[in-house]
Each structure stands twice: as structure tokens, then as C-alpha cells.
Image (cartoon, rainbow, N blue to C red; front, top):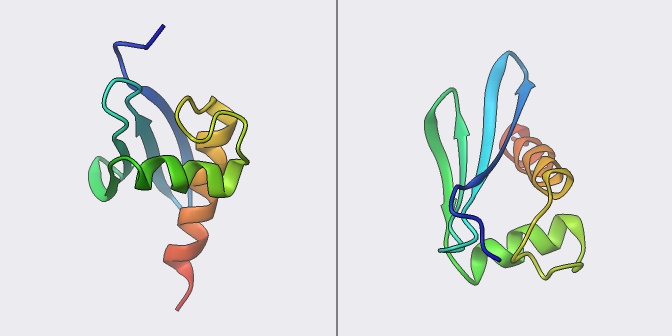
Length: 82
């Protein structure tokens, strides 16, 4: 059964509130920093982004909170890289 509301996880990283939201209905994945949109993916790119950091348990189509936290950590590390 698909979730109606997006799965959302948050973390405080470098003094900012970072949020990852994933909609099982649309496959849209958004990364926000203090409410502002940083990145946005749609299928199949959203699925690949999740699967690349979290493994292929659900091929990125039904991520867990732990998998979305892994995506947050990975994306924030990429954004900090000069």
C-alpha cells in the first residue's frame, strides 16, 4: 500500500535544519535546507539516488527513514566538497 503523505526525515547539520521528503505516490524526492529547496529528483533519478546510498533493498522506491538519513548525509557531504 502506498503512503498518501510524504515520508520525511530531518537532521541538524552544520547549524541548519536539513529535510528529505519522499512521495511514494509520485516518486518525487526533495532535499530542503531551512525550508528552501536544495535539490529535487523525479523517477527514475530519485530511485537511483536513494538506492546508490542505501543499497537496493527496495530499489529506492520505498525508502525507510534510515535510507533517507543516509541520503541526507551523503548529499550534505557532496555540498560541502569544494
